Image: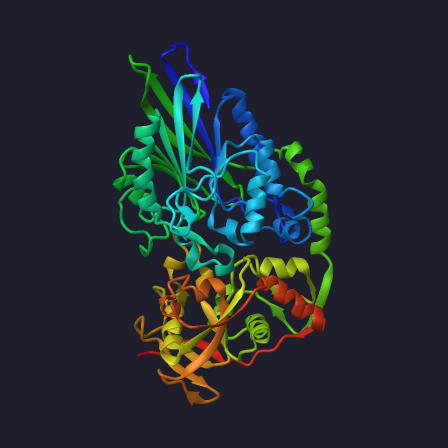
Length: 536
């Protein structure tokens, strides 16, 4: 990380940062098997090039590393106890200095996470995650220090968004306590400054920036999930803040703190360059700091050593993905994500029916998780299932009142606005600063209409079950994914509601099993709901 200039009293430090890799090693789009400008193989080639100029550079991963691709899924289902996780193998090869656990590190339970940590040649840092009632972190150290060029001391503090209990399967995080990330940074930064006296202090935070970097205006509803801006403005002593979680490409400065966020899936890495000058007493003063994003483009050839580390696993994964598991009759393809969200669609009806069968209840809600989802063609492969159900969600059944269902539908109705031509369009809040199309739900087992001409909060104009109006005080058991059941996506009405049952299988497994069992899936659609546009 250091480069000594001709003047021995000056030094340049480089910190390279990845975040939200989500299991991407090969530059592969698993939906189409086409090559893309992403993944650790391309990042690895770029990191090695940087090392040629700065052999001691600091290399940090900021979380959400082990989950997210079919490669990672295939490994976790088939190779967990016999091989090292492909992402961990690559970080070891590239000689990472530290990693911070992201929220998706917990998706497979603590046993899997501890195995990944044990296989790592680098420490994992997370100051705010402790055993219940404890202050000291449960994962190794809260921070590391490193001496650069024999004289300059760098400290790196790791911290993870405390919002994880809102999303994660409770069985995966038993006996853990997630302390407020901002308060954790306020506790540790002065302590590190006092005890370690570093010349450079870096906070690596698996969480995002909640305000516009330039204006300070709130860029999202301020829930505490993302606190990066507050860290820069409320905590003295941070020189560099690494962020992630939102999958944004950001570099800049807030209140004198240099900030970076390098997107997702290995599309870029963050590079922070710090110029220092030595004081008379031997310590170092920062003269200049600069953050930039280095993109993985067509000119970058994937690192062959990284590719070879996971080649066999990648080939097995590709074969597994292309095995046919069923077929459809009728049309279950999604031509337009917007059209799919405007009225009942055979693919979404299928998703809800899978959830209803697995949970043995007769009301369900589900989201089209990505605008890239294409539904199912004539032949269904495991690739089709995984690309439509890319998140490791399990299912939860909540007992809800009629008023909760109405409030949830009103929350979903926020997804729509009328554009300048009076046409139905997607609310920009669901696209910026982060794409959140997965926060719009579609229901089966009730009949409803949303009128988007009406004011927000008054858009549910029909709500019935089998022709009978659903009253506020009626009670229903409703199945939904675990993220939503915890209130994820601002569905506050679900928080604290009675949990009737939890189905502890990933949704993609339930879908695959449903198809295996039937082999032929008819495209059906009972048109139980629609979005309308009536003049007031």
